[in-house]
Image (cartoon, rainbow, N blue to C red; front, side, top):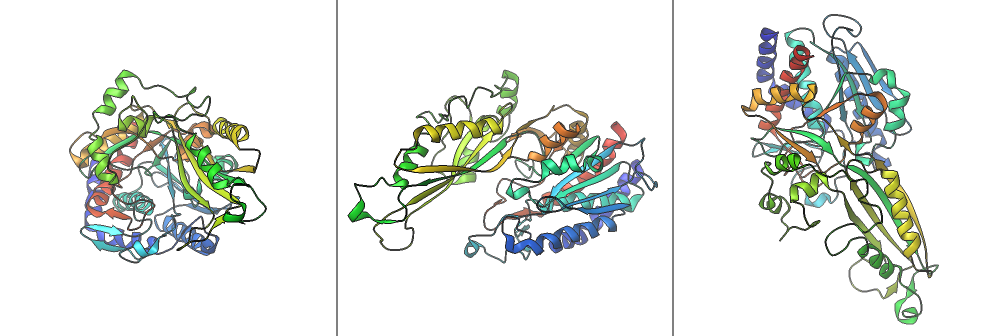
Length: 465
């Protein structure tokens, strides 16, 4: 295995241009999942990935229909067998091929779907999140296959709805359970702390996302004629939103913290070792100062404490100039990030009870659930993480950092709860990659090292299992 590992690593070094070219092909497909106008691009991206799995030697490939966007599935057996080798471990590779919208497009310095290199980074929508991570994995497998048969069975679950909360995924995992059965899931949808600090994520926050709408009068009114006689939905919504936090940055929903798993002293010490202090986040955000729940460090607040954020507010006239209007409606998008052992459904009920209790009788309201996703916590010393830690150390020359991620990747919890498949979480994006924002980028030197690390990972799993 040592010889084939070296051969695979040499192939990766010699074929970086080819790997990058493949990534640029996938990036060029504008697979925006939230906009129905891009339906055909979603189909094209799924078809492109299916063809790529066939090129890599998958013996079975399917584009699985779901209630929403399709899942690309395939499998490559270990060794030279035509079917999965029962004596070898099976790794399920997770990824998503959908991307966020590019708005505001005028802030991009180059075309969003034309990969453009500047200062060693590749700029494009999806370059980091997560087409770059998907293609790092496929490139690693390509290199391993160049040296001989795969040392492990590999299956794929490549979805097209992650950027809209994976609404079809939970049912699809049940529906296609036999295709996703595995010993371990490799999920490269997180990232690194810095280019010289390889990272393994062992915890993810869940997500419960809502749209709240208030309605007062039947239509917009003249604010001079009716102001003072009809309550303004925009005023009411702002009051309600302001009441969702107290002066210490804590969420005020009754019961919100009851299930929150407290950090142990040992875990707090480990998180304190991460080089992500206040200065780190001030530099990343450009904010004049930080904010958050009293009694916790910024690293703890982001990875291990729940939050409630207002993601957008719309009401009344927002164009240039003046229009003296009393709006008939007001809308806010509200997201909560949840930690073990919080339940997204219970948080939905808490938010609903809050608005039921405090929306004034002068108006009506409704709450739409956009997505609900559970949090995740894994054992830092499980077999998958040990294989990955050794792989990262082999490439970077230093032991990886372990961190809890503030974002959400619901698939990991679904796979563990529904199929008993644990996940290892990594990725080679960086904090300044502008995820979901204009000028998203991928640091190419880090990406190439990531490919090498994944080569080591697949061999390590075979050796350690």
